[in-house]
Image (cartoon, rainbow over all chains, first blue to last red):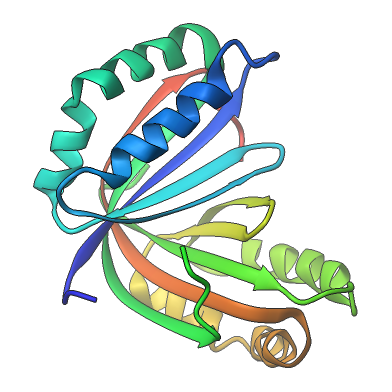
Length: 104
Length: 104
């Protein structure tokens, strides 16, 4: 693991119905993994969805945000899939781990 | 919202069975909300659990980590509830939001 890296915390509240959400979600995850500076992703959905993606730099986050296919998905997200979301861009300052590594 | 704040990303993989986990989880959430510097918490569980808590300072995070009831829960967590977890302490550098505020 490099010395310093970043986390994007995406917390969301969905609208009802799928409306192409899951298919697009899978496409975006596949595409994110191909981006320069991508480290990993963790995701869980219950009442709210939380997806945290990890990146080597703020530039890598910016490039992914401005990726054209991702921009299209972001617009669809605002129109169709989310009633609310919040994005927090964070610098990981410290970390520790317990137990066997869970492979992301 | 204050100018700068911190996020603790707790990602975990549970062992099988409850073994007092949910009761303790509720107690810890109630207790966390009473701590100085506490801002909010977001949580979702699926294959993995992701809980993100938000704090006004690194000191507030340290105090909560060293709270005696919380220390006890942390030990129980390692013995009984988690096969793996990872904690990342992060500085929130930027944030943006879409739609109606979802009350944490």
